[in-house]
Image (cartoon, rainbow, N blue to C red; front, side, top):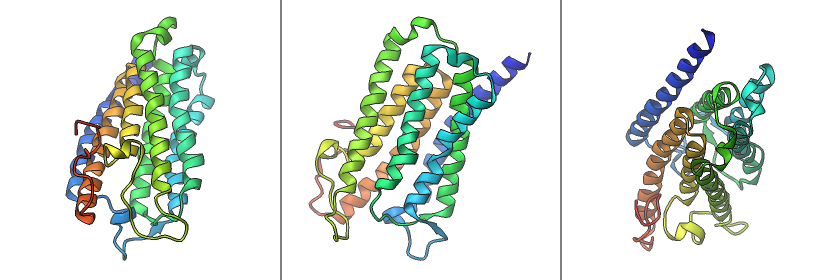
Length: 256
């Protein structure tokens, strides 16, 4: 009787995540993101950029490892579960252990923004890892199912786009330069938020490969939040640069 009760809780947490995605999107529209270029000079206590990114993303790596270490992670004996959890962990290993240390300069992040991101990463890290390690049931040949194969390819392509786009953004300024520039190259030729597009593709791929409410909820949450932030970036570029390419879409090439 214990098992179905927890499965129901994990499903409820996934539906709550969907609701939080829509709510977060609405709130971000009302009160725009307030870090990086949008931070007001006298903003509340700020966390240095590198430390903020490392700390806030780390729970998505640490919580799953803790969840799997403290229980007999029965389902992880199966290849599909192991691969799906590895996909999740690989992203967050890059985001928490590599990405922050590549940041050049970077404005401090408001403490509350960092705390919100940290809290989400605890929540989502627990949700994804608990479901995959204990309850997600896949046929042994799931890794050859078209949904898994297409999803895995999307996840990989999305992650590479995300990393490449971050690389372009980091290298916009030559050493000693300040100020903002229009990103060029890669998918920035087509969209304002190429790095966000990569992340949306990545988690939609993960959601498809996992074929679960939990994976789908994370993909939906990511899309809601990043779309809203991409719209803010797009407006900012159009206002700041008269020569900003008008044909560029917001987040999805050729569409939106």
